[in-house]
Amino acid sequence: MSLEDLYREIILDHYRNPRNRGDLPSPPAMRVEGFNPLCGDEVVVYVDFDDSGVVADIRIDGQGCSISQSSASMMTNAVKGRTTKETRELIRAFKAMMSIHEHRLDGDGQEVLEVVSPDPAVELGDLEALKGVVKFPVRIKCATLSWNTLAGALDTVESGGD
Amino acid sequence: MAPPADRRVTLDVPTVRKDFPILDREIAGHRLVYLDSAASSQKPRAVLDAMDRYYETSHANVHRGVYTLAEQATAAYEKARATVARFVGAPSPRGVVFTKNATEAINLVASVWSRSADATARVVLLSEMEHHANLVPWLMLREERGLELRFLPVDDGGRLVLDDLDRLLDGVGLVSVTAMSNVLGTINPVRRIADAAHAAGALMMVDGAQYVSHLATDVGELGCDFLAFSGHKMCGPTGIGVLWGREDLLERLPAFLGGGEMIRDVRLDGWLPNEIPWKYEAGTPPIAEAIGLAAAIGYLSDLGLDSVRSHEQALTAYALDAFGERFGADLAVHGPPQACDRGGVLSFAYRGIHPHDLSQVLDSAGICIRAGHHCAKPLMRRLGVGATARASFYIYNDEADVDALVAGLVAASDLFLPA
Image (cartoon, rainbow over all chains, first blue to last red; front, side, top):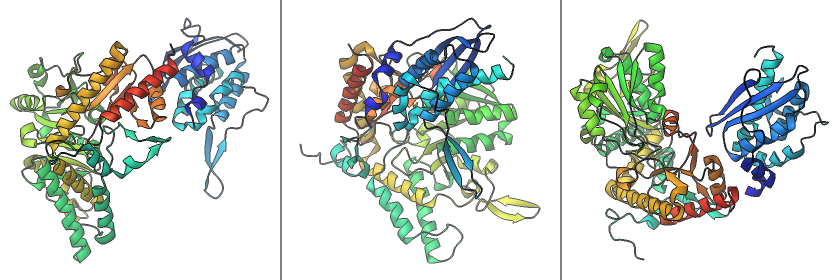
């Protein structure tokens, strides 16, 4: 494990020059907060869906480490223009890359771990740069913070609330 | 350089380091630079051996058996209690209650005091710099029992503001304050607060988790009614802490957890509590851990707490100087600027680099520091930060460790903020 596996150049670029940083008028934009109690990171996701459920615009506010900030920055680029369904698939693919496991007990009461299975058609593009985070397990929560926060926004939208 | 003849005067760090087996290991090809003793200290061979020897030769459950092993285990456990009592200047071992850790010791007092007749004044005075261990138990009781909480403020220099102490104490039943901040390193004027608390008719508890391991402690000099601390921050094992309490209070206050050992009699329609301190020790206690803690106290006492303190103060001064010379305004240390006012705990902000990233880069050079809110989120908000990086020193740290930290911070800056 080397630092270069974690701090890839594209990650450092997004950290130093975060994309879609700031806020959106809310309402109409949805505003969702996320917290990482481990390192005190706080992320605020502002997301605007158009009438057909497409992510029309998205902004990130808050504070955090290079991994959480760059992951959030790359996420904004990746989800803009996607439908909620496509965004869900991307979140699932990202979490699969982060080796997020789902715990369940099998018929014999043994605990089994299943990696979240993504749609193989989903391409992660630049986000692949964050793959190295898996080797630093304590940082996975940093990388997924903004994604989980965005997923919370989708839950609210799909349940019809705001 | 020949080691000083008397380790009680000057800490002989190279010799101390040889006592800690873990310091021989490497991290990522680098020697281990352990700068997180405020979270948990490492353990000397004497502690590991004492616990092994106990399990290999004398283990049985304490207090009930009449056979040889049980007698030996009980004697060792109670001897450990006496060792703790002497270490903190307690009048007798009867006031020493073994707990899981300092957190449990504070929870014990919070629980039994708030249920007692002593709590007629249902106001508790804490401070803004408390660890969650001395905040959350009280916040829970505020919700459950309607206690009123007040807080001594912290000034910009990381010190408690005591200007309004007498006014804040009006109507207070219990004061609970840390003797040394785990974030700022601030050493608080506990005696002054205790005297004021007593003058106002309140009881005084001291959270000694960061203090007892670093400075000679005497409950009489502190002027407190309760003192809580943890074994694992003072070279002892995890899983054991201490509540020292004034014996008349421990006798008067109700029991904490119910179960075996803490009773004198049990009937289907009632029970009678055991004598102190066993009244507060329900169930099989951490026997090996108590013996390990006694070994740790023996180890620290041989070094001498005065030499521990002077070593840490000198190392803290060296680190503050090194930070200032190398980084200037790029590195801001939270808390008192003078080493004499603080323990060996340095929380800092460095060039806007997130503490988590600093810690990650330092880890790649074998350097362990803590990054986060240090279980003091209200204090983080007071400081206006989400997290800090924290380096903390103990008996096995030396100037080479500080130099490694400085070099690691330069490397982090090169990575995140290239010129």
